[in-house]
View 1 (tube, rainbow, N blue to C red):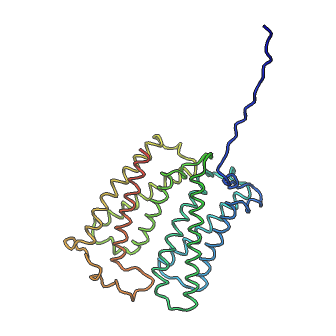
View 2 (view 1 turned 60 degrees about the vertical axis):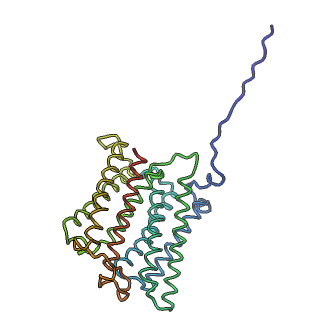
View 3 (view 1 turned 180 degrees about the vertical axis):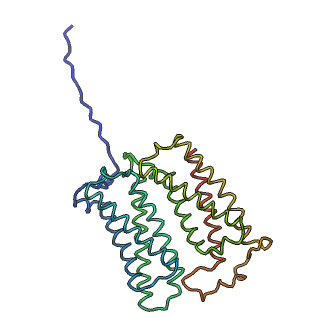
Length: 316
């Protein structure tokens, strides 16, 4: 029987991304600015920069709340500028950072910072302003802050849902939870800037210690991944992450009991009703009274407890 000629078929496998997502990759070329991600980051720069400049130019800020809003816009602008400059210059591999994690971490923080400023600034400032040109500038700053928040959220969504790419830890659900947990702790510290709120009782000082300990542990995890230093841990990384999350759940559980007990129960020298706090009146513009701060800390403690619980369930 005659030999049949052999036919070799070459099969080519290609990696495809969702439509338009392949153009999100930044390369070391100015043409990257006209890519979707490049245009989005230009929008982020312009919106955060305008919000910052409008408030500073009109002098429409004062106190810790105003400083927080200015810091939020300035931080977001600076981080976006650094990310864009590094990617345009093609310096990702020369930096001692995980570039799979750094941009998404900055974007996640920027979403939360701009969102908080978009809420805090109108509540503590704009509603107390007279209807003049200063108020108009302040309203414009809020609009730019909202635009920046949406643009950063879009970047986070693109990065988190991009199929076919090798995503870093910070783009995962647990990584984003770490960012959220540390940010909520920062807001708690903002409301606790008056030492009189926690120096009354040892139990309240314990609550502050819990906030600090959990914040430090969370930031350490973020820095380990950003610096590609997880190998220095003496135990396996999953074990460390699970143990850290479980410890934070336990610590926050004590706080969610002690803080409202000592702040809102008259038996523990607490103030159960807002009208019993003389500092809570509309004459104190551009600030938040003590009772409102205590309520905000209680709410944020519950939020962070839920976040650490979800983190523990995802990492275990």
